[in-house]
Image (cartoon, rainbow, N blue to C red; front, side, top):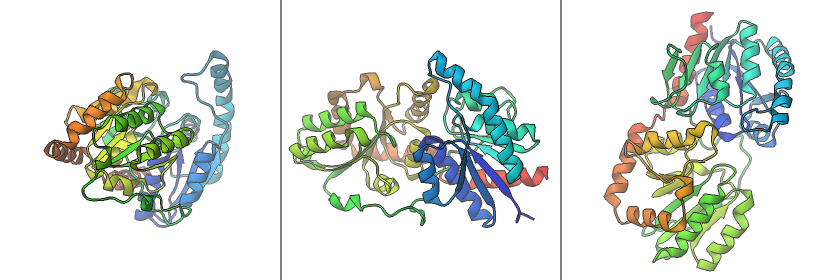
Length: 371
């Protein structure tokens, strides 16, 4: 009875929105090998190339963000909405999905609106503790809302939510393009304390500067192994500084094998995006979280607080971050393995590694119930 299921996953542009959509698609494929999935989003290279690597079909609509833009940009983006809805309507009418899932990002809005106009079953997946403006609006019209945090706030009372956790991609997808074996450049000696630093797919200059400064201040930097995802703009200068320190470090703009690095890390220093937090809690890793200060509605701070309040991570606000503060935190944790172990255990308790399968199961149930 499931053979002809078709599902549209709408949204993306950033990894925080796109990767949970890919994870959900993987979960659906695991349950129903013949399910047809179409991603509808933007035409940004990151989105199109990533989906191509994972082997998923993708079409783009003409849609732009509104939040945080200037007046002219907001007016231009709003003027595109009717056209985007028409585009989405044509796509939905042609593909004939059984359900349309929004994973956040401004492109998901027109697609979900068009889906409701056409009488389709709809759902959204919210990655953060504070929903973005698109999902807050869509929550008023969709049939089901999948949330990642129990503490999620911002939806209207009575909204049909289910706490599933944030879906995590299966590592090492066979269709991904072969990547250089970066990890071989850095031996992971058992006596060394391995730090993994990532500011997300685009990097984070404030974290990069603080980490490099901290390593320069540490009394015995040779006791550390550093794996640092810098982002494209900072890779060169970070690499040069590490070389001058003769530090056992590998710095790259982007790591395609991030799950492997996460497993090897003794401590992770990162932003507090929902995807990153889902990955590190699923495997139970201690972390120092530095929320991105300009995230919509300050949602990264609320994400980080959800872990910090449970003892699963430490939090340093971006405006308080510097080499001295970060270095002291790193040394404190390195010298206290029992505290690291407790943080890891509490992170593991928070994690929901089966979120991908849970969301897929609920989607299939929602379709079956409404058929």
